[in-house]
Amino acid sequence: RGRFLVETFDLNALVSEMVGLLKTSISKRVVLNVHLDPSIPPIRADPSQIRQVVMNLVINASEAIGDRSGTVTVRTGVTQCERSYLEQVALGTELPEGPYVVLEVADTGCGMDPATVARIFEPFYTTKFTGRGLGLSAVMGILRSHKGGIKVYTELGKGTLFKVLLPASTEPIEAEPQPALDRVDYEGRRVLFVDDEEPVRTLAGRM
Image 1 (cartoon, rainbow, N blue to C red):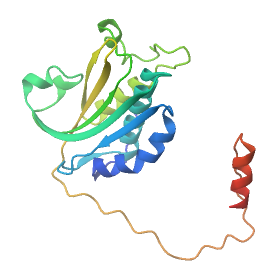
Image 2: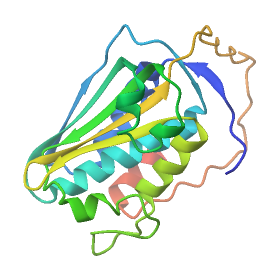
Image 3: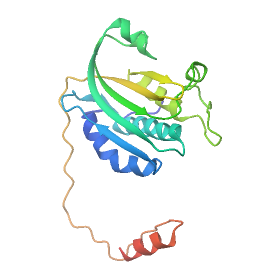
């Protein structure tokens, strides 16, 4: 419920920027596939909040696969949503008909039964031993604030797909301000680098 820094931007660009971070955040036995539709319109939202949505869904998908090998697929697209469809979407009854940008995150994990699906967006509800149960409830809160929706497709033992809907924007993408190229004098400055692996600390020190 904090203040959002809303701007018009390309969801594809945001996801592309996150690919490196996403790959390091998921299990090494999980393959991340990304399929971006170049024809999607921009969205008007807070980029940092949408990054949190992507990160939470991808990590959740990786954890659903567990210690096994599997794939997580991130896909973007655009769809025209009618009232009959929106009524099947979480938060959809509050949304107007029209074009929506779609973000899909699918996994080949364990899937969920109907009883679990009914509770996954509850705060502090988790099926993981060490989980906090805040990831999906945070996703729901962010989408509610952005007038978006989410739909879950899942089958026990066959994986899960989360489909996020965000209103398409007709406004042009805002140009990022160019950083100043003035030289910065770092003489005498110190950088504190913290890591629990000595080789990483050594490498960072040499750099």
